[in-house]
Length: 185
Length: 183
Image (tube, rainbow over all chains, first blue to last red; front, top):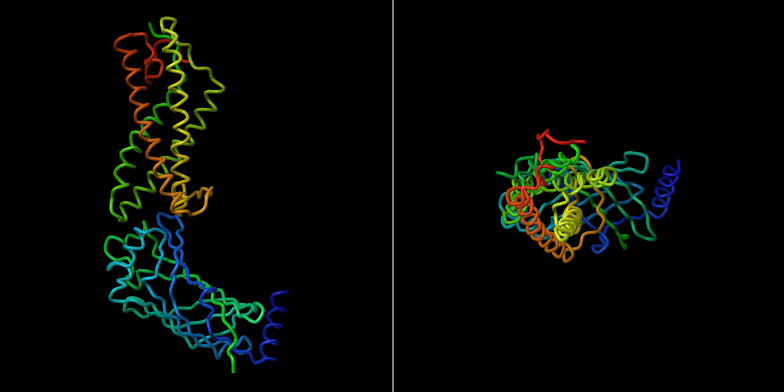
């Protein structure tokens, strides 16, 4: 109930102001992921990414996003892993330096939840992904939090000996935390 | 002469621990120098599971030891040997505690949680800290070298008692010997 009220408040506040959010506060935003190695959750992070987003909480269906992740900026938990994961059998970051996600499809799921669906391109493969997220307004910022599962083998991430999913699981949980500032008109 | 023996439980716990250490030590040395591969990750996990098992066995052993007095040493044994044996056993127990603990802490500091048998996550007692992780690795290795030396002394003493002094000390801890008093 509180969430609904909050959402209503957010929506009406947004509608009243017609507030669009876009520019990303990079230092407050993050793209992280969790892999499972022998069933041990291991957290990783991409230190460099850019995001062009436009989102109006009052009219989420007009939202759009283009997110580019510098795969060479990966921190997979250890120096050894970082070297490995940039290599050919994983990201092949030399030939495919960026992963990108682009979407013009945003919708309200209800209960304070939203969803975007779009195209994820990694290592030359493009697949449709859906990512649910929540929105909250913090002072004059819009904070967007979400996560979605990604099957690494769909993109050929971790091929050869690493395709053994009993050691490194196929499913990787990707989490994003974006802090957007209002669009100045 | 066969003096009083350790209990079946104590004997089983002792040899099970011995078997695990014989597996753990070379496994640890081997996996540490492997290049990153699925095999390495698998072996590290097995090493951690076995190490946790040694730790759990130690807790059982301590509980058993407190409630079951070990058989008395033969009267023929000189006092200095009694003290040496007692000291050595204490040090071995200490290392059986400290080595798995240092491995567990090292894993946490390196940012890899220990999930026992892939099922039971152990809490991370310390957070991720690269420098601390490297230090704990040194500690883990050094403690293991100490363990190696102490084990050689332990085995050497047992063999000396058996083959030179022939005082039946080793037989107290040998499984499948049913002569004498097995409580």
